[in-house]
Amino acid sequence: MFSYRHAFHAGNHADVLKHTVLIATLDHLLEKDAALTVVDTHAGAGLYRLDGDYADTSGEAAQGLLRLLAPPPAVVPKKGATKEAEAPLADALARYLSVIADFNPKGGAKIYPGSPFIVQHLLRDHDRLKLFELHPTDARTLAANIAQLEAGRQIAVMSEDGFGSATKFLPPPSRRALVLCDPSYEIKSDYARVLDFVDGALKRFATGTYAVWYPIIPRPEAHDLPRRLKTMATKAGKPWLHATLTVKSSKIVTTPSGETRRPGLPASGMFLINPPYTLKAQLAAALPQLVDRLAQDRNATFSLDAGG
Ligand code: SAM
Image (cartoon, rainbow, N blue to C red; front, top):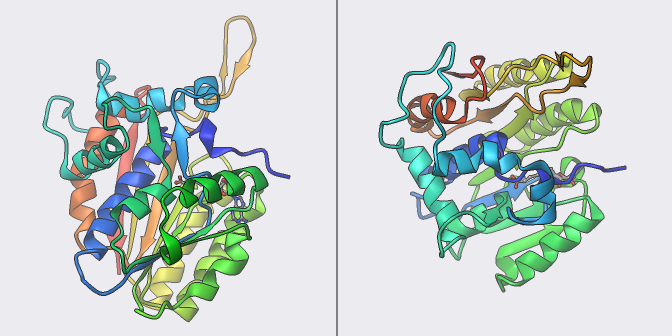
């Protein structure tokens, strides 16, 4: 059933956006002493080697994380970006790179931490992490990677459907939670399942922070998703934030020899309900720099909206 393996995509531009937002959000939530529960509905394998077979096959980190570490000559983007390649990195990006560096003490970026390891790295002893991963191989790898941490009861790994099972942890005893919903969207029904999941979760636990990643691709469900999440948040009277990063055109290119080339993932977005009030300003500084540094053509741009 599943062909998606996150190892092919680890450290790409979508991970840079998602994990920058994740870290900034967590940093804010962890300022309070009360215990935090993080629920990761689609966890992946947890840790990835960027010099391994999967990553070598696609080389996606080369157009994501690695460009932040060693910026290429800038492609001047058409709109939405300022010329900031020379400016010091925005705080949220510097923080993202410092977390990646913690996993690569000898320098460079051979190891890429997925969301479970990023979260675990930041949590305190009294916080909790609930991980769901359905792909049998990735679930086994995740469980083995997590077992090495000897984290005991702090982390639970479940080889279960995150959409169906994750709400059982809501609300957590401390009534403070961050829920990351990051499916692969390889099945069209994932878009509707995200909406059902967030709707159900908000009804159980209206004050939780919800972060949904989604791909921006030419399909109606992908365009509808943030619009529907915004309606959902607004109806519930909850604040929301929506950030997108585009690195290239989504057009299928035909080469002079008549070959058609799909562009690969051109853009993605993060939609948050009950975001930290500090996040918008952080992303307003970070997103133009991501456009400058990760642009692959002149269509690169970003958007940032918030309401509620
Ligand atoms: N959150 C991870 C990160 O940031 O490092 C990446 C997750 S990846 C985009 C999506 C994962 O969801 C894949 O590993 C896939 O096997 C898994 N998956 C797909 N459907 C699922 C479901 N219904 N419940 C739990 N996991 C699922």
